[in-house]
Length: 81
Image (tube, rainbow, N blue to C red; front, side, top):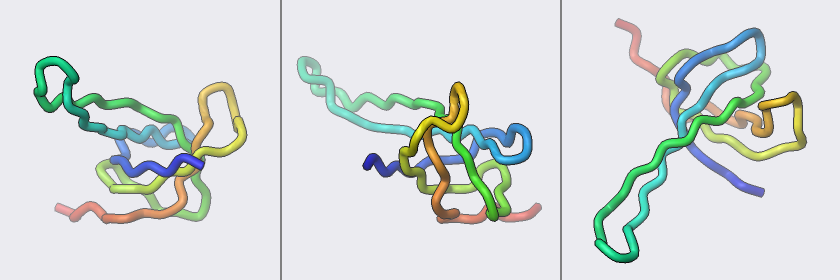
């Protein structure tokens, strides 16, 4: 099972969130640290999510056309301004 951590970018509909996961790797030839971001559509229930929350994801069976991950926990909460 693939476990990822990311940041909530947007909340779509009732049970769907878009989460950005950043990964860093070193380029094999130039040895420069490269950052790549990828967006995942995730399913969640019984969580009070807001934009910019840090969450953990786990892959699951296909839930819809785009949703292949579930949010398991909220790691950090956003500060209210």
